[in-house]
Length: 107
Image 1 (cartoon, one colour):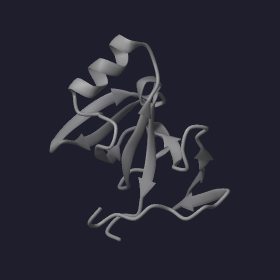
Image 2: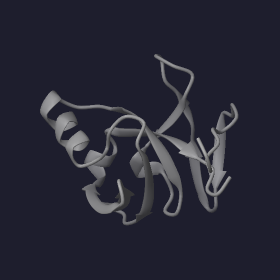
Image 3: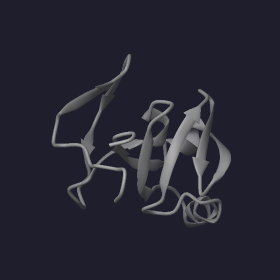
Image 4: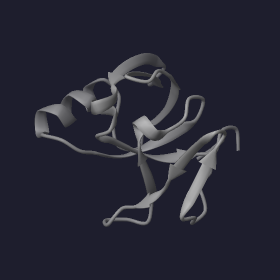
């Protein structure tokens, strides 16, 4: 997509002062991390949601749909993200169930 590139295959990647392990999913070739591990200021594309049906449906309703591009703004226990043009806060435990494919900012 315009303004975004996928990361090349690497066993690990270090964002500025935040080490991040990139994991391969069993069902595809995309490399994903939980949203809670995406550093502030970086973007990611939602790859998959984990949890019960009601939880996943609610996440989709507030914009965390598969393929949506989100931006992590900040926060530790409550993560603030920009999704669909709106700022949304999600608890870290819920953010752990949102798996994103990291994107290069501005690339």
